[in-house]
Length: 116
Picture 1 (cartoon, rainbow, N blue to C red):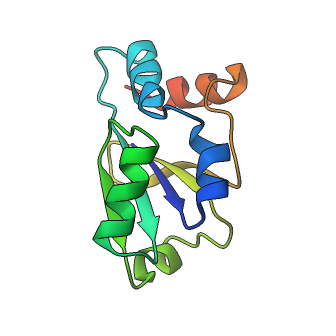
Picture 2: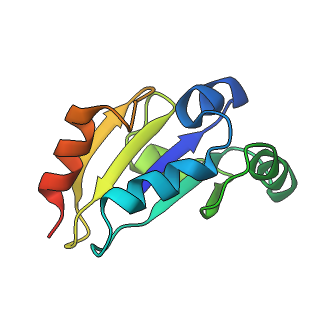
């Protein structure tokens, strides 16, 4: 599972890129048949702003809300965007603070090594 909190649209655009719905398809294609899901977390905004952002970015994965930023603090996301891969046991298996290129070979290999 990937969680990418995005507080500012400029950071979100750099992280997800235009047509970010393709991110999910690309990752899921490379991990086909394995348990994998992409989630995004909107930090500090309401449902209307998050929905507008999701539509503008053409997200095809769930966009969760962290209006009060409690989850952001609990996860230790000091920098946004922040990305996490959660293992089958529910613990954080990989994390990255800042923008990340999910298509970079070293990042893909790190995630694939974590998959059952």
